[in-house]
Amino acid sequence: MHRPTDGAVTMTSQRWFTEAKLGIFIHWGIYSVDGVAESWSFFDGRVPYDRYMTQLDRFTADRFDPDAWADLFVRAGARYAVLTAKHHDGVALWDTGANDLSVVKRTPAGRDLVAEYVAALRRRDVKVGLYYSHLDWSHPDYATVRKPDQDPAERGNPYSVPAPGEEDPARWGNFLDFHRTQVRELLERFRPDLLWFDGEWERTPEQWGMEALAAEIRTRSPHTVVNGRLTGHGDYATPEQGVPIEPPIGPWELCLTINDSWGHQPQDTHHKSPRQLVRIFTETIGGGGNLLLDVGPQADGTILPEQAARLEALGEWIGRHSPAVYGTDRGMPHGHFYGPSTLSADRRTLYLFVFDRPSEFVVLRGVRNAVTSVRVLGADTEVRHERVGGLDEVPGWEYIHLTDDHLDPLCTVLALELDGELDLYRTHTRDQAASDATP
Image 1 (tube, helix red, strand yellow):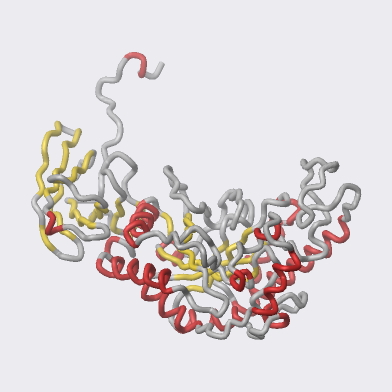
Image 2 (cartoon, one colour):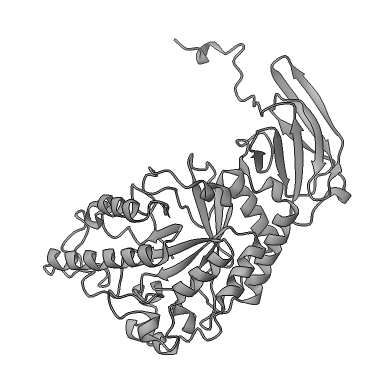
């Protein structure tokens, strides 16, 4: 879906975002009619553009029930959702006045799908996110300039850049006017809690006018959180399809598909298991991020049972272990425990996520605090633990003894009560080697 380069993260997020932990990404558009890749299928030449656009004539959304969507998202444990209001193909899911390329004007659906989605989420106090592609491969004025470092003699993709000698900065200015009109519509009509931009990579931040756009968003809708693809002006970073080994320092979010596709592609039955999803989710929140988990509804607006079942399973697991999820901060750095962890807001309860069946025990390393108790979260069962080794300020190992009776089929969570705020031992300094000494 995306080929991003996240810009620097400079703005301060609303607190709700860092506390949300889970959001649902929804890739829905005309591409779901034939089950082809959203926008990329014509850009990469797999489907002729004209054939791709004939899906407009068959997009009905006749079983779209936004309240059913919202209820499912709540059961999944999500605190926000992000809908593709407009992908790179330029087809808007709302009644835009900027042009006529919308599902309201050009498809049998004839409905403002964004308005219905927003209303359903708001009725359930789920935060509203809207995805908007900066680029628009259908707009006649889009492919009129190229990046300054691109060779003007190269043709490039005709949906993206002009032919050599056909650059037209005035038409690019017209496109930016169109772009700003649509962004203002989204802000003024829907007052989104989050704007999820994409498609920034084909132009420079200066060509996009990112600084001015960011200033306008902050003026018109100061409460709106914006992702890092408002290059250089976003609130948080947006890696996708892989948990960073060293997570970003500030707020961040991993966007991830349930199978291998963003939008509905019926041949893609490679769905991640609930156990895989729980593992990715805990790795993400353990690093201080949110998981934005994607579903691809069918053209009629229904979410596949296979995808709904996985959201339900994730939500059931979260419900059994919610103290380790909501209201927590990122956990310990790598090395203290062979798995992710989170930390309570008062920094006195440490939650360990145990993915695999231990042979006898799990081990916590490098924690100076005394561990006063260990409970299996969800079962509320205390388990035996002991401190082994250690000398003065150097802590030993905390052995936590588990049996099969303690294990959750998806992921076991241990709640460790500490005798104070978490105090980690990371670096040995007592007797450095001469080569390590500071000159």
